[in-house]
Image (cartoon, rainbow, N blue to C red):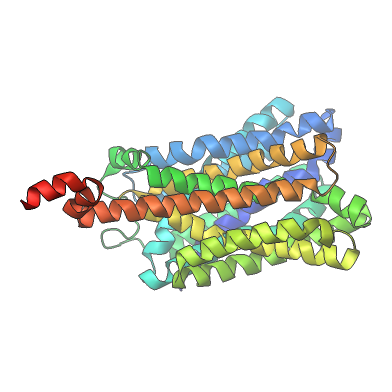
Length: 410
């Protein structure tokens, strides 16, 4: 695998760290800025909003630039956002800085996925994407816990300064390792430009692929958003043990991400459908797994593994549906991941509010995973139908209008 994938993974590590570390720093930020914890929670929402807006917008605006330059520019914006977060004098300025930090997130992963797949043979595309995403999953295992401890002992501003340093390291890695010169399609934007990129979003299969991402990862976040009360109220863990269990989730996610990349290189459809089915099965079993400490630890690990098996296949599915102009669609898929985060948490919360019990969000997530399977099936059905029309237009017309076909034969 090319060393350029390491540069992409370093950037993903920094992005994953800054995205999730705020959850652990909310009490410290709230105390320092003299605001309530719910108000501090808006800092998480501001970052997510930046991702949703920035992913398609920045991908569209940079569609004609060399992708190597785009990646470096996006990381520079990432460094600026985190440095401004560290220096923010008050809540409003920190809110704006968090929004700015989120803007390059989706576009970096979207454009990075296109670059990663362009650097390897076709039979290793999914593995290349999984190696870039490895930075994101490792961030949950190591980056977020270390950054949280740093914030608790040195102050939350030190955390964002440290993340800025990671961003600078990513810029240096991208400049050194991503090749300067490529043959067409390797690191440069396609000739279609902005118009061609926007045309990709008019495709029904692309939208079905994006909806599969929303449903599939919405299933994860419906359960994961409420994992702490499940572990404490159902499994009987002390709150002090939750951090260790979340690290197990990160271990499972890392293993699932690497497994998904290998499986998808053999069969993208098999990896996607198998991953969604496994996720649904794990979530259905979650209420049983949460009845004892040992099974709860196993359940958290399996949840991370089953969910992230689908990461690379979902990214490649979107890129495949928009093969003529993949950058915008690939970046839009990152916005879909964040919509899944918000939507899944909302649906899981509805089950709790309805009084169905602490583990009920997992069953709501299972329903979303099944929905993802249905949408993915619809996407592949539409693709087969369109391929059949393209390959044998007369045969398709004849099969649906037998009277006309009979008339033509005579």
